[in-house]
Amino acid sequence: MMWGSLASCVVAVIMTLVQRLMGMTETGHYWFEGVKSMLLPITILMMAWALANVNETLQTSEFLVAALGETLSPAWLPAVVFILAAFTAFATGSSWGVMGIMMPLVVPLAWAVLDMQGMAGTAEGMPILYASVASVLAGAVWGDHCSPLADTTLLSALASGCNLVEHVRTQLPYALLVGVVALIFSTLSVGYGISWWIGLVVGAAILFGILMTVGKRAQPLKPEKEAVVAEAAD
Image (tube, rainbow, N blue to C red; front, side, top):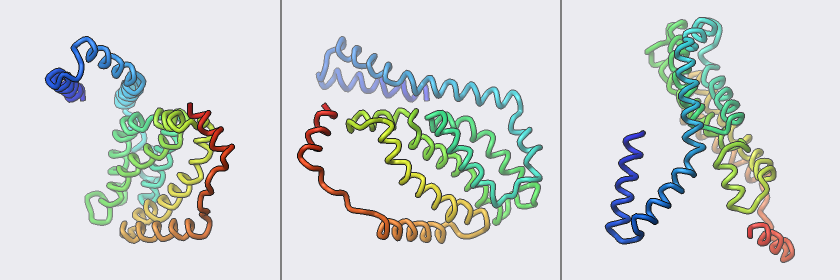
């Protein structure tokens, strides 16, 4: 990541100077502006990596394997991982941080749970392992999308001129609906051996049915409300 970021910065500076879009002084100024805008995500990633190293030093994955290896059902493992990742991302507002923390813990835990049940490396067990890894990614993105602490949520509210709390409150029902349907008809179904495409088709059909029965077409704003929205955006 470090070398890739450095190379992209060098290429961007060279292309800017070659095309004579800006001078070196102006390019350096805007480069520092970009660095400042990335300071918070970089700090979050550094703290997440530090916590991941602490977990590795404390052998957290080994503790989880010993504590849950024999008691946790393989069928419920992807669903549990999704809920934990979603809750952690919602509380921290960082999807990358959750991925960095949970991925080194979930992979050995999932393999140990499958091994305890004699399913490790089998055609029955590998989909559960894949679903557990995917649940870390999906839960982290879902929690980050819904969190009022996430930079994406904050920037979306600012860009649209919407109050942050109102933005979170209005998007939560949609995210919760999709998350619950995906959890039940995709994550749990894979855990119980049902093919993923069946769960995908059933989940999409349920969401479409809910949209057609409960959804309402948005009404245009009245002129006085349009003026209020425009003033808030300014």
